[in-house]
Image 1: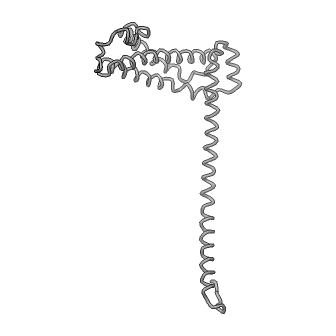
Image 2: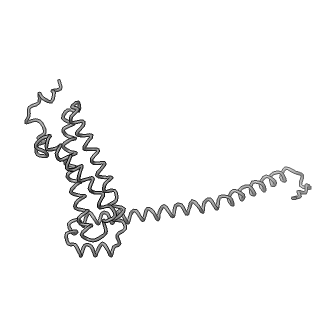
Image 3: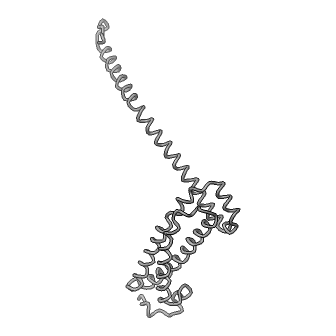
Length: 201
């Protein structure tokens, strides 16, 4: 027999108070984070204005991501405790929505960062030592940039190959037709008397 949630000993259940002490605290955090995510729009177009702006926006985005993840984990685990509980189904849905809003709010980050040159990146690291803390994160973005342009070049080469193939195809087509025609004539010739003379118009 499967025990109901209220029948399980408290010591055998998850202690989610280490994430948020109460549901009310979670709801307050949701409200606060929703407002913060909405302010992210002001940073669009300014990521590479300076080393300080890169640091500020990077720290803000990563901090928000950590907080939203915490919000999501609480809602997800609360919902898993009893999937029939409408309240926590709603918590989970709201957390998922906020996660999507966060991704959308900072969708400008990677495309803008891809505009940085190696020289500018090195200069930023020198001008703002605190960026060193995020060097691994930023270097990963640089690697994604390199891979992106490699894929672009690869796709361009593939498109060029396709174009050349289209140009070659007609000549191959006519070559095949001509060869087939000659083979047909040669077959007919072999069937004819050796004194038969073939004429070509």
